[in-house]
Image 1 (cartoon, rainbow, N blue to C red):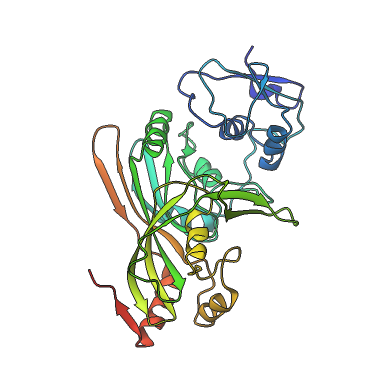
Image 2: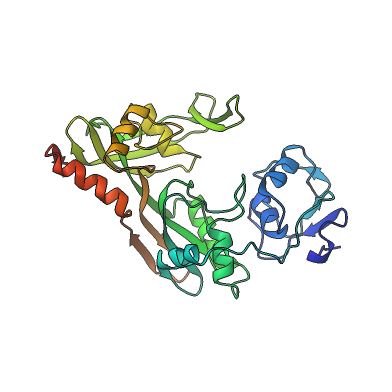
Amino acid sequence: MTSSDSQIGTGVQILEVAPGFEGQRIDNFLLTRLKGVPKTMIYRLLRKGEVRVNKGRIKPDYRIKEGDLVRVPPLRMTAADEPVPLAKGLLERLEAAIVHEDKGLIILNKPAGIAVHGGSGLTYGVIEAFRQMRPHCKEIELVHRLDRDTSGLLMIAKKRSMLRHLHEALRNDGVDKRYMALVRGSWPASRKRVDAPLQKSNVRSGERMVEVNPEGKEALTLFKVLRRFGEFATLVEASPITGRTHQIRVHALYAGHAIAGDSKYGDEDFSKEIRDIGGKRLFLHASDLKVTLPDGEVLAIHAEPGEEWQAVIAELLNDGSAVSAKP
């Protein structure tokens, strides 16, 4: 038996994984199928083991297989076909942020402050907006994620085949992603890598944090100095070789050079000085993306950060203490 949208909210649902959907994480699969169900509810069900696959318990990072039978307990939710109407200004802003679009892929230069998906008190994000902006694209999905406060290049697949191809590329180091970050102090040119395992933990407030811990998952980030602003700050390029949550932010802190505007892992005094010259955002930006498409074309895209970032860099340059990094 396969459930339909009309059954949502009427009792137990059995969702059968159709061909072309295999390889997705179970949480992403449920977010797609259970329209109107809050993300927090889906994760709570997974944590409690109330979602079963082939009658067995699974973890939230389980990757579904073709033919899997996913049992979902009774739920109360809003109707699946009633998307939250989004402001015209937001839709226009996201449309203007697109830097590449073809029949299977959208890449946009996501502004800072916009979540990639709804949840945790948010009714919408980038993916909900694009489902309204491209209603004919029935299979549209996020390929990967960026933190809400991080700006930069974000891939959205318009077809299931593109999503599978790019997920495979991400798993096999077939995607080169590079970030720019403004960090505290003078980053030494000799510090080219941070290799430190990361582990997620919950603080007392319930907020999820990530920390360097020998018991964590291996994590490697490569760093390169782009420009120094005296002893005050450094603009660096960060290349995450692994893809852990908050990896660049925690590795920068671990190296002793917290990222400007980072409310979780930053240095408040440094962030305040950056705010005083107009920088009221997290100074982490996904600037470069290189990936091979299914037809063999190599797509390489660079995107500059927004006006606020540029204005802060200009202020630091006007200070007269900036020094370009040696090649």
